[in-house]
Amino acid sequence: MTTMHPTHFRHGWAALKMKCPHFRQFEGKEHFVQDLCEAYSEAILFRDRMRLVGDLDLVVEYDQTCRELEKAVYDDLVIYSSHPQASLPKF
Image (cartoon, rainbow, N blue to C red; front, side):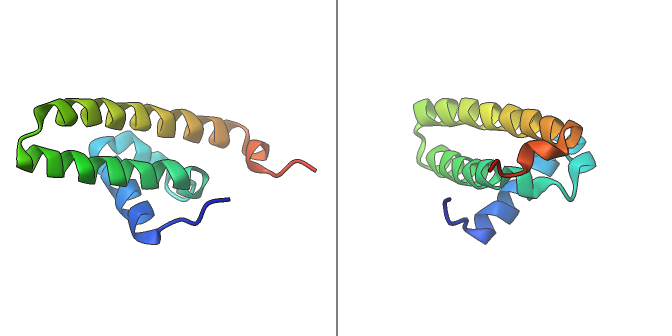
C-alpha cells in the first residue's frame, strides 16, 4: 500500500469536482479513488507548470493524461457505488 499525500488527495478531488461537476454525486466515496485523485493533482500541477514555461508538447501530453484519469476516476466510482463489496479486502 502506498502512502498518500493528503494535500494532493484533497487538491485532486476538489479539482475533479470543479472540472467534472457530476463527480459531486460521489461525495463521501472519494476514498475509493485516493491514488487516482493524487495522480490527478500531480498531473494538473505539472501540466500547468509546463504551460507557464511554454512546453506545448508536454501540455498536450498531460492534458490527455488528465482526461484519462478523469475517466478512470469516474469508472471506478461507478463500480464502487454499484458494488460496494468490490472495495472489501479478499481473504
